Length: 474
Image 1 (tube, rainbow, N blue to C red):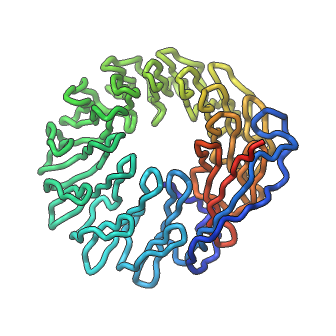
Image 2: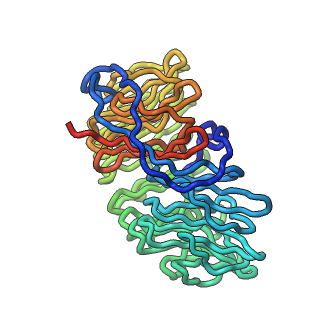
Image 3: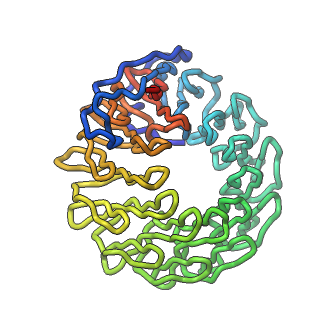
């Protein structure tokens, strides 16, 4: 589920009634920007995409929440109407209820299914694909969880003071508390944290694990064969991977536990005293003043490890155990998909640049969204100069706008697409072709399909559209 850019949709759409989806229309794009040929930012004189709009209906009045599917194709709104509430999905309004659970609206990962929690007659139940589930005293944790393939769904329900998981409609064992519902990547296994009294343990496929004083950071390995988590033992912390318990430490960096693709290598940030370090396969690395939140990454094959570390008031990137130069700040550390290349943004004073494979690029007022192409051969990012933003692709700067967001490469790596702000309007730019102007987009940016079609949702004059940039064969 993705949040909504405030200025883009909810804050400026005019309140109107709900209507059904209409037929697609072909829209003429704006004049393509004239840029260097073969740069991927533009190709002067070429118009490689036709643009289609499908109206999904006006944005309803009384919207209190919104959610967008991760594939960028569907959008749903929670609407308040007097003392009732209902959900509108792609312009189609569902039934009214006494209330809709705050934060409960969720799309399945592939965007084909939607679920939320509703209330009626003092009870709560999950509504999945428009079908009401069994009513309970409450739905706890509030948001239903879909498996990665979207085929399964689970949530936590309550009867009196007891909690249990409802998985594919089947009720599980009752506990004093439940948190952290998690499906394996293939959707075949489920794990969660349960409590009895003051103890916590992981339940994996119905089997209870070792009890601890607390558990956090539940995670499946990419191959789904192992479960890992942070456990509290008195005032100490350990990382548990399967049946193996790691060394005790004073703290585990939140969200730092990462596996390589086959699950055979694991790394995380840990603390002893006032020093932080990275543990790789049980071996502690060098100590630093801090490890950057969310910065620890493993290449898919697990041969490379990179993270941001703090040292003497400076920040540096550590790659395969080797320290890079110290900077006043760093951001956006990424590895290429094949793990062979590294890029990140670095700051000296009030200037930012992008470091690619150890080489510093041009300095700017700001940098955002460093991304590699799927084959790892190209790099793009947003940069700011003179108060204006533009995309830099392979060192070449594109046209300037008032803002840049949602930068993404096409599947073959030949084109980049991004959202650009022009005054109080937004457009999508792909390969130099500037699309129609809109009031805004759901946060998260446009999405490429395998055939090269670019797709996204957009709002204009109070109406929500699904927009496609379809490649034109030459």
